Image (cartoon, rainbow over all chains, first blue to last red; front, side, top):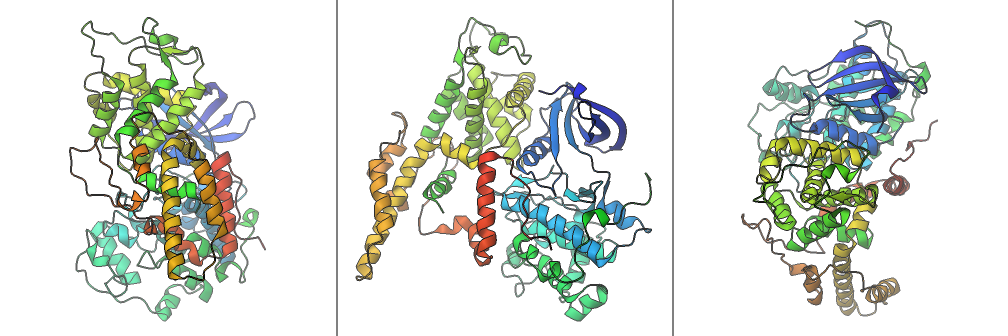
Length: 310
Length: 305
C-alpha cells in the first residue's frame, strides 16, 4: 500500500460536498497529479459507495479518453484517489467568451468524447453523469471523461436500476419518466445534448426543475407518444403532458445555423426520444460527420482556456 | 456465443441455492485456517489488525453456514453479487501468507468483508454498514464491520476488478452441469430439426463437441450437497427446471422457467447485429484481451485521417 508520502499536496483547487481536490506531485517522478480526497467522516459508516465505484470502474477502464487513476490510498480520515492532472473542463471553455470554437474543434471534442464513451459501453459500463463539467481537458488538448461516482455496470436486462441519475439538463426522457430498465442510451442522450451545447455555446435544455425539464425537453425535441415511442405510456412517471410536435428538419437547421447536414443527422440520432431508436456509440463513430470536411482539429491545436482561475 | 458464456448467462439468473451457500462456506473456510488460541492480530503483520474481539464465555459462535445464509436473507443479495464476493475470497486466499491463521470469527469476518465490497461496487443501493452489523445478529459491531471492510479492501490492494475469466474459474463446478444441459438440449433440437428436414446433413461440429462433452463429464462436481448434480440426471430438464430457493423462500418467487430458445437475455448482442462486422469483431477481441489482462490499451475505432 502506497504511503501518503509518495505524493505532495500543494494546492487546493476545488471543494464539493463529497470531495476536496488538490493539485500535487508524485514525489518520485515529479509528475503533476490531482488528488481527490473523499471526505469520509472517519469512515463512520464504512467506505463510501460512490468512491468504491469510481475506483473500481477507473481501474477497469484504461483509455486515452478516460481519466487515468494513478493510485488509491486511504488514511485514517480520508480516502484519496490519485488522478492524472487535467487543468480544465469543457464547461469552462464553453463559457469562456474569448474562446472561439470552429466546427473542426467541436468535431474533435465529440470524436474523443465518443471514443471514451464507446470504451465504457463496450465494457458494459454506464457513466450516468455526463455533462461538460465532467469532460476534462489535458494540457496536450485531449478530452477525458471523468467522475465515475455514479457509474455502474449493466447486469441482467431485468435488473432494476435507479432512475435518479444524470444531472437534470442532460437527463434522457426515459429517466425523466422514471424508467428503471434503461441502457447505454441514457449516456448517448447526454452526449447528444452536450453536442448541441458545443454548437450553441449555451446549455440546450436548461430546465429550472424536474417538471420544467420535461417541458423544455419536449418543446425542443417533441413529446413522446405511443406513436413515436411504443410503450412509453407504461413508464412510471408518464403523464399526459402537453403534446409538442417533433421539430422539422428546417426548424433544426434554424436552431443550429452552423451545423452541416451530417452534423444534424448525428445529433438527431443521439436525441431520439425512443431509447431503442437512439444510435449507439459504435454507430455514431461511423457517422459521415466524422469523415466529411472540416476534419477534426488535432488535439494540440484545440483552443485553450484564456482566463486563469476565476 | 461460447458455451461457457451461455452457461454463465443461465447461472447468474438462478436464485440462490443451498448448494451455492455451501460453496461459499467451503470457499471461505479454505481461505485461512483457524487456530483459536492465536490472537487475530497475527493474521498478518503487513496491515494493522484490531485486537481479538472479546469472546464471551457463553460463546455466541454461529455456524458459518447459518451466518452466510442469514446475511443473504437479510440483505437480499442475488447470485451475481455472491459471485463477485466469491471471486474476492479466492483472491484473498492467494494473497494471504500460507502460514496465517485466524480466530473463531475470522471466517465470518472475511465473508462479510467480501460481500460488502461486492454489494457496494455492483448494486445501485446497498445496505449501510450499520445494517450489515445488524444482519450479523450481534456477532459483530458497527466498528468491527467498518474495520473489516477496510482491512479486506487493503488486502485486495484496492483492486475490485472481477473479470469474466475469474468467474469462469471460480464457478467451474456450477457451470459444467449447465453447459452439459445446454449441449444436450442443442443436440435434441438438432435431432428434431433433422427429422423435420430429412435431407439436411448432420452438423459434424456439434457431434464432435458432444463427444468431447461426454468424455469431459468428469468435471469436478460439488460435494454431496450439490443439488446441481441431481439436475443432471434429468437429461433435457433444462426447459422446465424449477430450482427451489431455500435461502429466499420467505417470500414467494415466481417459477423460473428456463428456456434455451429464449435468448432474450442477450439483448445487447441482438442490438449490435447490424453493426459493421469488422467493428464488432474488433471490439470483441478487445473485450477479451481486457478480460484477461485487465488493462487494455486505448482503442481506436476510427482510423485517424
